[in-house]
Image 1: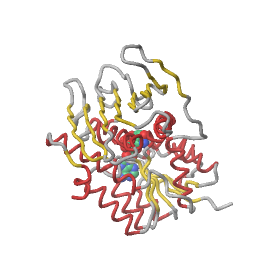
Image 2 (image 1 turned 180 degrees about the vertical axis):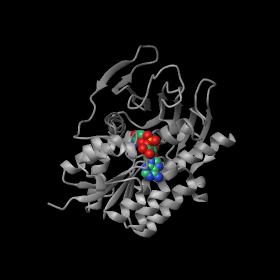
Image 3 (image 1 turned 90 degrees about the horizontal axis):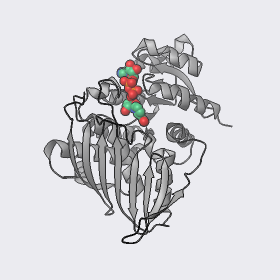
Image 4 (image 1 turned 45 degrees about the vertical axis):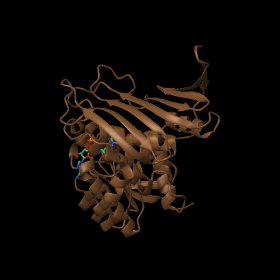
Length: 349
Ligand SMILES: NC(=O)c1ccc[n+]([C@@H]2O[C@H](COP(=O)([O-])OP(=O)(O)OC[C@H]3O[C@@H](n4cnc5c(N)ncnc54)[C@H](O)[C@@H]3O)[C@@H](O)[C@H]2O)c1
């Protein structure tokens, strides 16, 4: 059995808590990685890493610089707000560490591309935890589309709607940053569209805004159309300031219109509908796939296996740069009112 990898967790705040309770302990139990230090600029949240990861006081730090200089690690995990990601990547590269980072790669296309170049030049490995594409319901829908049982995929319709209109109900920083819905929410959905269609994006047109009752500085609501390179079309509705959480996190509505069947995923129920011109469609439930883990625990496991000589995971930096290109092209579209050619946008950067 190989020696477990050593890792430093950076950020044990909101989502970092999930890493401390669900992701890192599982890597330990699998013998893949052990956490040698945890960092957060807020000392009040650090004890959480002590309890769940069995760390002692000298393994807890309020500065990432200090943690990386005091502890040797194979990789770091980045679970701090996107504006801090590039700084953490730079530190990791200085110390020769691989990187498993929360999405998006960074807060701008320029920063994403700088990170892409720096990681490539350093010969180190980086992957991005696009949790929701790797959830059980999305993976089951993807498998159904790709089974070929329903013929060719024509188009996708996706609804993600929440009542997080009150300040702080979606984590304070998201109510303060520009383009909050797209940067912190839709980036996951764009990656799902890429996976379901089996294609990168060609063009995007986004209209985004914030209704008067949404306590957001940036835009919280969007209607977006995307043309994929392989001809699949996607229609997306995302909203964070609605009057109800109709299709929130892990409970999205996605309809995949295929040549011989309408595949519908609604709040984790998957079914196929078929019918003639005037009849009510007949529907059949489809079972969801099963495996030991989904989302971040699964992604972290694949990342460690990659570092240990296994295959490159599907959420590698190389793959994810296309997701960020679609994200920031959509933001450009929202700001200019123009349709943006995603591949040209990426090439420009
Ligand atoms: N994959 C998912 O489903 C998912 C879910 C939630 C959040 N996220 C991502 O996780 C990241 C963090 O989001 P969050 O919800 O935990 O935010 P948060 O604001 O709740 O917590 C961030 C933590 O980072 C700490 N921090 C900030 N700057 C730091 C620095 N320079 N050094 C060390 N610590 C620092 C803060 O003190 C805080 O405890 C973001 O990139 C976000 O997009 C992903």
